[in-house]
Image (tube, rainbow, N blue to C red; front, side, top):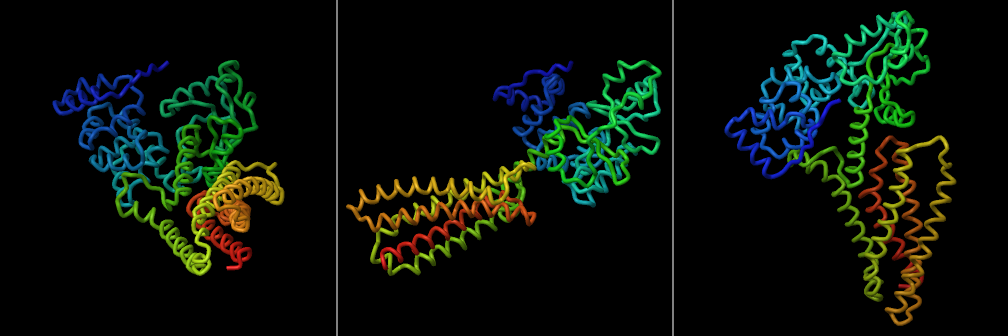
Length: 455
């Protein structure tokens, strides 16, 4: 069993490491990292300058350096690799699993990718990575690995064990053995336990399980993640249109997919239109944030227009202006709550989901109950503040009740509509809903005021 050294990053250790780098104390660097998990080393490199990080990677064993680079964030990977010579990059990528190598190469422009691949010395690994680059990044083919163990159904146990020993040199984790026929078509799966317990002359076709869950190369990575979650799979074989086994996807790959999708949803919910992080350029960060900010500005200008349209009414009943923030904030909050619940349900679809009509009835009942409680509370407060101004209190409470109903409806319907049109429904949980509900809230508020106060 691999023993992982407990690693704790302290200011004292960081200073010692930097001094070792400055004095080129290779022994200290190599010994201090011996047995440390690569994820911890990757986190440490974030604390070092780019020059220091490159020095450390060059000092360490090449396989360890390759494993560390895999653990780095995509933008950091790109920045680190760009500092290396092309041959160094090629050597490190060749030491990675094919899917990790393809992911790394996808960070580069096509011309740069071709230059790196031309420096590969392992033709098998080169062919594997080139095959993976043909698939879209967000499909099963794009995230699968070419390293897996397969056995022909006509082999006996002795032949199979010998093949496992040979093939396992390139496979870091063995979850199961995929069974194929002479045309390399997927036939089933066999566990290591069955192989070990069977007699030497037993044929694989006598012990393998024909029932196997597989995914096609074109399947979206989110669907693959859902299949593996639903059936609690540690790995899943990937097949092409002719049912030939072409790769496998492991639970490690799916965890990366889940993290990436969660980050995209969070950024969409906060109004960032593209996947970015703090290391991106000022121009890219601005372009990612600006669209929804402009939409928010437009919504604000329309809101100002609403208020300007009712300027005469506001001059007669100035107290109306005091409750504008209450109406808009409540509408925004209710809309975000509703849309967040719908987005969550869309992300975990079930064949037993309630029908659209049942969902709307439930949303309506919840909104009515919440709206009634909030409106009653606000009515009582306004009456107390404004010396029994019942008519004015009715305006605020009725408007608030109406806004809660409409905002709940908007928060429910918007993500469903976006999902139908193939747009990320998480967009509905951010600025889109907030801006829309601000305008609806103002319109309802002033309409109620005009109707009841006759202004």
